[in-house]
Image 1 (tube, rainbow, N blue to C red):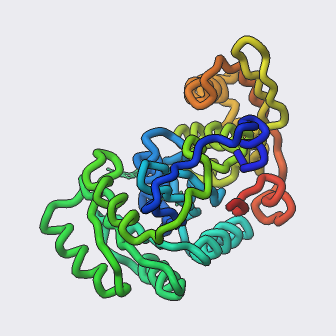
Image 2 (cartoon, rainbow, N blue to C red):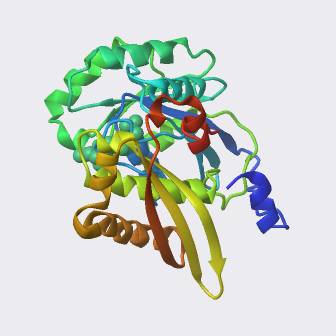
Length: 317
Ligand SMILES: Nc1nc2c(ncn2[C@@H]2O[C@H](COP(=O)(O)OP(=O)(O)OP(=O)(O)O)[C@@H](O)[C@H]2O)c(=O)[nH]1
């Protein structure tokens, strides 16, 4: 939801914390695809705001989530994983992530603690070093998958990548040390007022979140080329009293064969996607959901900058 939409729904303007020592600012999460950025964001927020999957490049939108306590407001910018681009979509995602390093107070770079640091991490670190004026935190993510000895070795290797202000090994999956990360961010944030109302959690438009929740189910149900070839758009979404959303969404694929895979034998696959998505959407929207999904072929959309923009991928905060 953007601020205009928020204030349209909350004409009194919502509540802003008034503590005189209040701290506030922006923290960008960056890292290679699959480093665990979106999962960390969800754990901090205590609910699902960003979609996650073990398919690299799950995140296609840069967006902000707002975490407010009595003492601080951190505006977390989730970004698409930085990687070697293969097509126009990949380039758009990289540009979007690099842009999110500008003008923020804290940059947190996630490095998977359970995997050796590679050239991809070194390249991301170079982008982080180039981001002037922000404090830098190194997050060794997925610590539940690494032994203590592996974590110490990773610490030593990560020390060489940048002059970090802090380093935290954490697991967004178990929650271990996530509080320590939030405390480090709070320490590094400047004093300042809350920028957003205390109860505002994200600036993603609702339609975009709905499309993303549907896309997540496809990422989790299919492998190989299909997850990268799909785009999801919500065509229509209407609220019906007392408590029902009617949602009409289109899943775009690049080839007829992919359309067949998404639909499945006698529609079994798309039915499963619909059932899984509906459950999540009902939690997100706090209402019953009627979900109509259709599949359309749009050849080579990932090479078409206009279509990428129509989906809104790469754009955001
Ligand atoms: N075991 C374990 N798995 C994790 C942890 N954090 C994330 N994962 C898993 O790692 C995979 C990638 O996580 P995401 O949060 O989607 O990663 P991301 O960095 O946002 O990925 P992109 O969108 O590709 O940039 C998912 O399958 C997560 O469940 C963790 O702390 N422990």
